[in-house]
Length: 79
Image 1 (cartoon, rainbow, N blue to C red):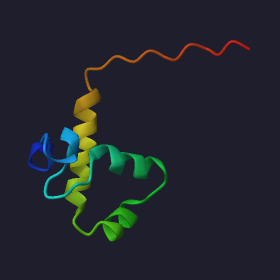
Image 2 (cartoon, rainbow, N blue to C red; image 1 turned 30 degrees about the vertical axis):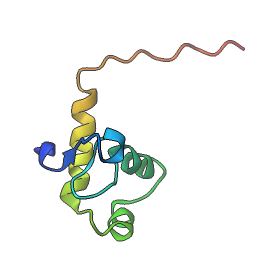
Image 3 (cartoon, helix red, strand yellow; image 1 turned 180 degrees about the horizontal axis):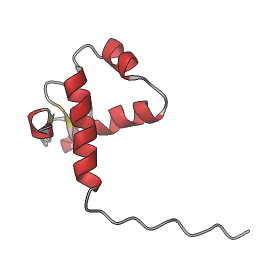
């Protein structure tokens, strides 16, 4: 998947946040909705400017963004 064909950043659109080409739908918003339980079908119905390929591009972008990041577990809470 070549997400670069679908995900853009432009300082004049969405404050420079990565968004789906031809929309003002940010990657962050779409991932938030999916994390909140929205289905692909619900997103496609609510936002007809999206298609299945643009949603796959959102995941491919997120994957590439974190691929080389190193995450440490959060420290245990002190009780």
